[in-house]
Image 1 (tube, helix red, strand yellow):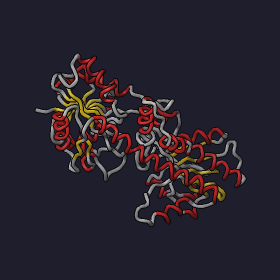
Image 2 (cartoon, helix red, strand yellow; image 1 turned 120 degrees about the vertical axis):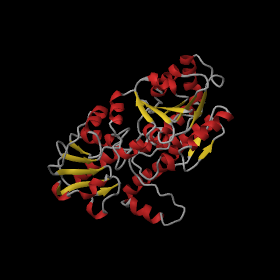
Image 3 (cartoon, helix red, strand yellow; image 1 turned 135 degrees about the horizontal axis):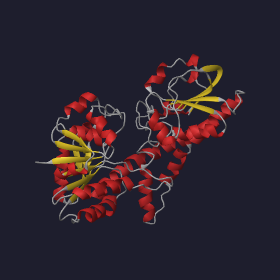
Image 4 (cartoon, one colour; image 1 turned 90 degrees about the horizontal axis):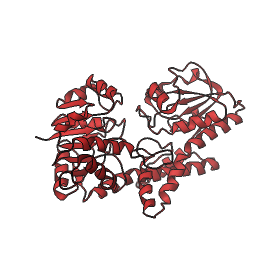
Length: 416
């Protein structure tokens, strides 16, 4: 009987483990004992899976003991693939997970990777680790598959089962087995790619395409700001045409869009090609946090507010709305730039975990709003912010900068 081991129980791994755990025996493995204890108690801190859904996965067991993986014959690796401080792929989590799998890998087993990588990474980086640790031979003793994750954190509409799944395998026979495995849970259907590299490339360009499109709109925002034109009004007018793409300006962070393009450009540069469009888009998007902070400071000066020791409120630090995920949040860039002018920045986010924010960024969240501010930056449009009593946190001349275009134009000083 088939048994699956899911390696990594974060935003990607847990929803996948839960869906498979409804129909097949699954071991959900994570190296963090605290995470395993939490899930066994029926709680998911990422808020991706509700307690009642956890209960439905009756064939799912949780473990941080690698020996429990000896019984599985399908391994699915769902660990993060971030970039380092130099914007280069950080493959350490992927290599570590491959070593873990290699220690329990048996003849006939299939290792499927879902982590976002550059084309060729599975065979060039992961397979050698599996071979070295296990002593087995690729495509003789064990096999690989690649099926890129398409999880959208905080999205309750597009879920694992309702998003079409790209699958692939290291041989035609394995590709079919991998495809059939996912068909057990994916109601939206699957697309079987011709090779691991094609599947890897498909994933990395999905978010690169979005990144470039958002960069274009961000550049428009920078241009229209100089013209004194409201970008959102321009986009609304242009959006009346049937084929106009509905992208909006903003901060581009998170685990995918702000990271994946660097995986593609890293591989391209290793082959002697230096991407221009992709990297120019990245530069625009990476600089938006600094631009927003500088715009706020200029507006404060125009309103005759003192800059040094001024009180500034930043609403939201997660990378997107109605989600606790703070990975690669570009709101942090806004905060650091505001602090560089000597302002006192308070951060309020009812969705984020304060301990996680402090651990990741060294920043403190305030538990509630208790005073008035010289400037307020609406960085993330959490649903809680729509019900704020603005009169209790602003002065008559408070600068309100709306990054997300959530508020009515007449109530804000400026918006991106």
